[in-house]
Image (tube, rainbow, N blue to C red):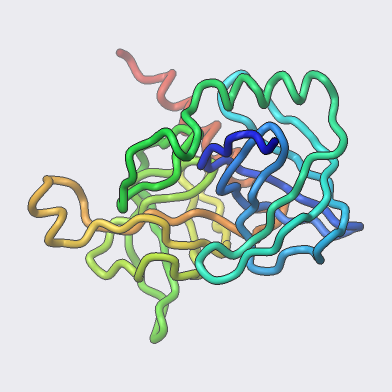
Length: 229
């Protein structure tokens, strides 16, 4: 019997042969994971997965097989776990136990996926691609899985865009693909007091991007610790 799936966004790295992709998850269960990406591996292929679990859960690795391919706004694949260590299973179970299953939450149109990674307030330059041009804006926060871009020109939901980030703390410039998973229109911002913009989820990046992002977040955390309470 399939185990319940949790709609959870965390960073994941998958490899097929010598090809490695850094992206994010959409769903997790004790049996497998739904990975967001534009170019999924072939159905039935074997993949090696590295899940970056938040907090003290650490990084865990699984061998898996691609069981389903997903298209459209749900682009990606479902991979069934076939090999893992007992510790990896234990840590994954701890994460899943802290979050409700997909069918146990009230439906929402603004944030259907849970963010397991912590968002860090940061103001830095972001450029994102529209049909006509790259638009210069500023980010309001960043996490290991995505970024919120403060803009009144947010792309439509599910749009896949190219983003260029001048990462806070390090000043490194990186480029990645991302999908718009959340929008706050200027009208909604005026009504709620929130900032208008788009929340985007990283996908289909390389190991260099993940390393640069980790260094930036480490720098943000170090700066917070240096500031007096």
